[in-house]
Length: 530
Image (cartoon, rainbow, N blue to C red; front, side, top):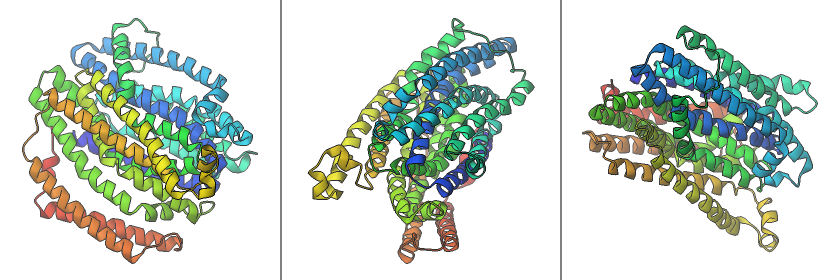
């Protein structure tokens, strides 16, 4: 499992770093404005459905069934399952994609109501949506291939596949945008091309495993029906944070121009610890948990889950404090250049700080969910997901009204509320705060029900593990606070000055954390697991 985690994480790290370069390129070329807001809305809708259906509910339903057929059935049955699932999934998503492209104006109205009164922005959103939505079909087939490869413990190639999207978007920003009358459309075409290339990228690996087969319709195939029955409940359970983000997209469309872009940039910073470690752990641990469950090895099940939780905390807790304390240095260093101004840096810093608070919860949920799905329990995560979703919606409204009452001038407060919301900068902070709190509600409910089900027995050594973690994080926080006190304003520095100062702070904070962790008795062998 550790080898699988390192393989998946290293490839995902490459993808996330390129994702960061992608966002830097977009910020430099386009800035934070109406055009970039339109693109992020158009990209977020199929991307949300990708995470919800392809990487969320589909993967968590498909991998346990695929693993069971692989362990107990013949290779011919496994190949038949691939043919039926790819044919059914592809057929359904082809219809969904065609409908959404046809009714793109209606979809844009639902998810970006604030743009309806701005004809140019709305038309741009619709045009971009028609370019980006086919990505859902292609990336879902990519997720199917990736799930099959992961079941054979081939984690590297699926984790490297998203690199293609980032490379296409970087090329779109720097090269294609200069050749189009409407430059932002280059990003839409880049997403479309990347979807096709990602599918093609994994086909040779499937051929090596003799799993490359002609797709066939399989609606009535028993294993396909099992996957579908398990998919429906997991739609909420595995994708609460994504649904929250989509609600944030709807509300952000009512706020000041640039809010969509600032929230998207904050999401990028979260993608590094979550993608490299949170999602990686969830992906690596699911086949193992499924195998232990199939073999009725309860002790092995508990040990695997315990390993995942401890490893997650070692990364997610320092990541949270690091992102919160270095939010402004990170945004200023990576994005403030070209069309991205100091004002944009301050606004993006707000959303990074708020969303960072939820990093441990986001990451631990990714590890806890496979514990339910491996046992084919899809109802419990739904209950937790619905509770978190309702909490997020209520807190969005509450925090938004509180910040508006605090920050809006009296003249604005006297007028229409929606008009006032679109003129006060910084209100997107409320959306990040609500998402972070809702993620902890989701985590606490999952943890409570996991313990009640008596499917996880806590292993020895948790007290010592948490003590080391607290001491190491405290030392790191002191170092970072000293650095922030010595260099308070990052928006006025030259680029080279920001780069070396940020490198020094990250290096000093990271080194302090690791040194204190090992000084208090931590050893790498504690991360080993079969």
